[in-house]
Length: 436
Image (cartoon, rainbow, N blue to C red; front, side, top):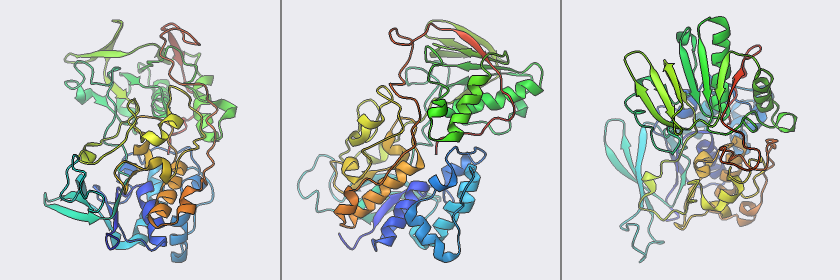
């Protein structure tokens, strides 16, 4: 199988970085991407500004590949998603050349002639990456190893608090978005609800708050499953990423004005739709009424369907790679430092298969580009036979400033608060913040 390429699924930041590392080590590689160009998922949130600075958004092997072409790494500043694609991901894909295939969807990854049950001769058989082109043509690509860097962008979590779509959520889908809004002006004078407690939800609330200040009659309601806002606004001065801290600090400073209603302990159970508006009901039968638009920004989850015929070890609760789950479990902590991030921790029961990038985190939040770049550096070294390099941990992450758990759902104990409604208003322009 040494004659076969390593197949990388996804031409996003981690997929392209993996290809750069493998190419640098002389390992044949093929990248398959369902989108029409590099960073297709990033392009869909191109209007959002990252709170990681440029030096934290480019990979070392990628820089070494690009610099002979005359490319210069941006030294400072905070790019938008569109900037990231235009100034880094697109040039990197061009430098990699025809190893990157676009418009190619991976439908399954298997072992040749072996389903999931069969032990006999399994390790000696290559992987088969089943693909479908944009015109519907199916094909098979043989691989010595597979790096799944396909991400989670296509699998947003629902508004329903139990992990399944709330009653009526599917029927009301025309009024529900699972993406950070760009132009919010169309909601002037309307009642908009934001569901979620992460950075994406905070960003959306700040943008909509600016609209509420400019357009009288605009109402914004922020629905939090948590029993309090204690961890919603980040670690402040303790956050190693200044712009991430600024996002939370801005929200915290304006919490006492009256433009946005913040409802805590609200777990969505049902969304009722009539001709003109939505009513959102919680598990304890509270209701938010007369809602025109909902932004459900409750995170993402991995799609592991393509790996169904392989032997994969995922954490039972997070759906993260089992080897790193304890380090990233938000029920335990939400610190920035992640010690276990290399090939050894990412190894699967199916030899030669690695899940990397945000997909390796499953449903866990706070993934950073730096984490993914370290993952693929180690995995590429392992596949090239350099086990010393694979075993090194070269990752130093900025702290979030929030430790001690983030699973505050108001169920009693600790710092949990009773369900409440508070208010929030922005001052100045909102930072377009998002984890990279």
